[in-house]
Structures are given as C-alpha cells and as structure tokens.
Image (cartoon, rainbow, N blue to C red):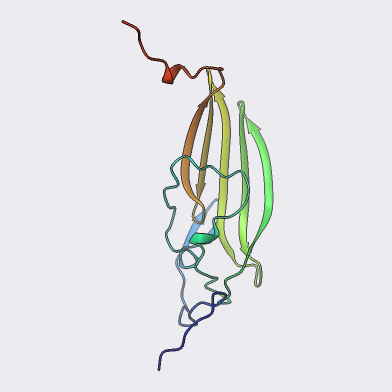
Length: 138
C-alpha cells in the first residue's frame, strides 16, 4: 500500500542528495523541483521562491525557509546582495542567493541567480520616457 505524504513532508528514501558548491557553500539539488528555473525578469532582492521548494532532503520537512548570512556590498557602482536559504527545521543549506543592481547609462539593471529562486535579469529605463519604446517617425 502506498503511503501518502503531507504537504510538510518529503519521501524518507532520499538518503543521498546532489550538492553544488558555490563560493564554498554546498547547495542542494534534491530540495528543489527545478534547479535554477528561468524566472524571466522577476529579480528578488529578498525572500524565497517556495513553489520550487520540494522539501528538505535532510530532515524531510517542507516548511518556510530561513534567510541567513545576508550581506550587501558595493563594487564599482554595483550593489551585490547575497544570502543563504536554510531549512527552518534542521538548518540545512538549500541554496545561496545572489542579487545585483547597477546603473548603466540610462538604465537600471537587475540580475538574480539562485538554485531555489532561479535566474533572471531585468533592465528598466531611468528616463521618464523609455528610449526603447520610442518609435521612429520617418
């Protein structure tokens, strides 16, 4: 007979999980539905994409994430925000999140890269009228 799992549990058969070392932090591929999902232009400076979290491969719980080791640095006019997503129950590191913001010419540029939250980039004009939206009148 097949045992059903509640929304806060994952299968206990996960004994070995895939890890991805990034800057000395091992991220876990077995805790996510899809690794680095394409999020289009949705760049998160904070928070977690919980729809992609299948549950912790270590403790088996599916709960909210803790955000730890958050840092903000500026390098050459670029803001870089990094933090870790941890299992709320056993503090297993699920993913390392990186968000960047910069101004290039007349545009604000945003990027996000995270095993859990995905990859995305966006560019927004800082001018009242976006020059990319202007049409030629010739």
